[in-house]
Length: 78
Image (cartoon, rainbow, N blue to C red; front, side, top):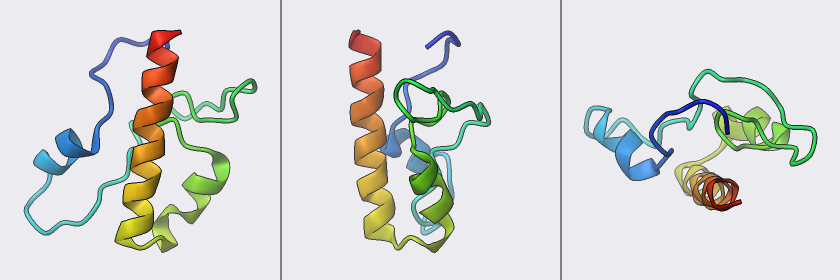
């Protein structure tokens, strides 16, 4: 990860939105796919997760966030 920014977290993202706004997208506007991992370098989602986001229910979005946070942690520790 070459760009310095705070780690992505659902908890932090939820604090930035008005109450009741729902689960926010993890998109940070750095839209480049990593050929080795298949994840976006900005939000750590796969193309399938990105494409399905707008149709996903809240539980599915939270599940994606859990994977995003896990992938990010793994990338930072390597």
